Picture 1 (spheres, rainbow, N blue to C red):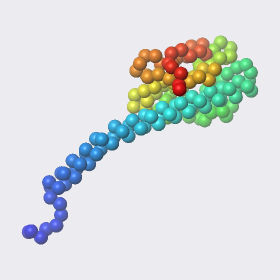
Picture 2: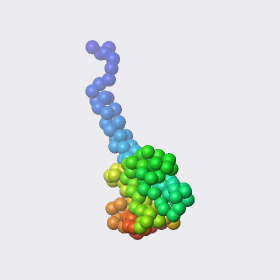
Picture 3: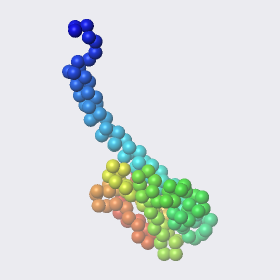
Picture 4: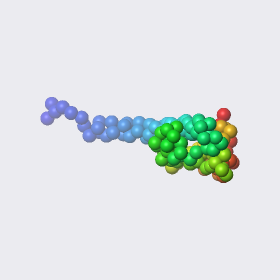
Length: 150
């Protein structure tokens, strides 16, 4: 029986333990990378919304548009028109007479991202930590809270 070839149970257990250790190290880094990617995509979408609003306003002066208006005009994609993209929820708040606007991007879960983003008619993008309590928010087409994005 000494001529049998193969791996012993101990050798297989050592390999399984090594794979488990590598997975324990890699999975948190993978989740952090995904969160960072979602946040970067949210900033890009907020910039797209601001550009779309500027275009819409130049064509329909002096009013800005809702997500549905921007989508119907072909200025944003269907995912953004629906209000959800890359695990972020987007909203547009139009001021009185739609002559001002504010858009926000909020993560759908803490795994998706931890920062909330916002932009108003002036084009300044604001951010904050979603758990910090100072998230950018919209009211009457104006933004409050958060700190300007560098």
